[in-house]
Image 1 (tube, rainbow, N blue to C red):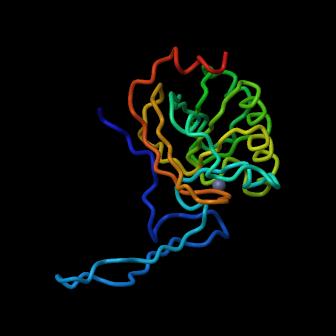
Image 2: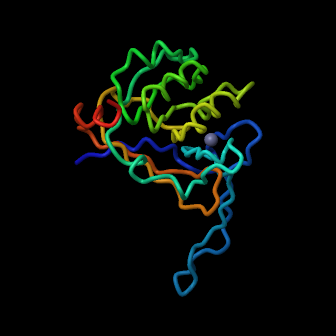
Length: 203
Ligand SMILES: [Zn+2]
């Protein structure tokens, strides 16, 4: 089995959403060949690099990251190409095969509110994008509220360049941060999700 890593490398060079804290890895000690060992202090925002948005990110009192169901974070997923550089419209979503998990190569472009509503209407339970936000930077609220309010898991900052559109199995595991409003994930695709399982949940 050959897995495809769709996780952004996480380090000082990782791009972060405007205004978010940078990723800092500060060495605390270094090995000396004897009993001393390497250890670093890690400082980062909960939405650094490839990460998940739980409902609590926008919905007051919403579920936090450790409550996201593993059954949604792991399973058959469709990788699809959306018009690169243009906001993704509802028509793009409705033209795609129905899938419980949908990863969109948008070239960093956001979804429109119509696209978010179309995802909810189609029963999508997880949507992932390659941009650092699923919503337009100037007005992030509505798209997040539509998706997170409906319990759709949002994954942002996926490294999808070079991934051939098609059916895969997604494994996307966030850090189990207690009360987390988001968390970095390690996301990988295994080839060979089959079309029957893709549509099973959403019919
Ligand atoms: Zn986020």
